[in-house]
Image 1 (cartoon, one colour):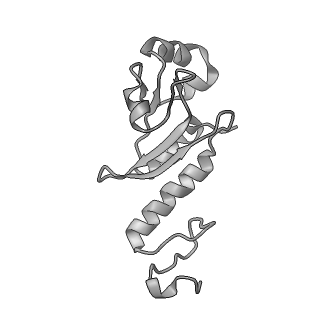
Image 2 (tube, rainbow, N blue to C red):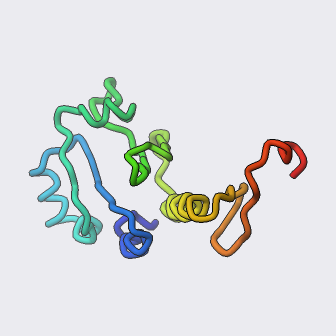
Length: 136
């Protein structure tokens, strides 16, 4: 079970900032960092969203439970949300897939090519051309 903290160095090499945001208090975050083995690995900011304003803004807040669901957002350097994934209750993140998406976004930004289904770094991309739709 690999957490974001386990891949933080790899994510940083991509030039990406990570923020952990939860509806827990800063006091809960402090205890988490001090007591939990996984919490001690966290080297990025943990933000307390006790008013649920951030969670509600991004559709992550579950009013029935009073908590936010696990949600991953990728915000571009231009401030645009370019990736959103809200995980169903009981389903964990796939950090390797998040890294692949980050790499694909950087690839498409650098080359102008699209990253097709299943794309991984080192593979070629495809031209974004209306005339090619349905032919590839």
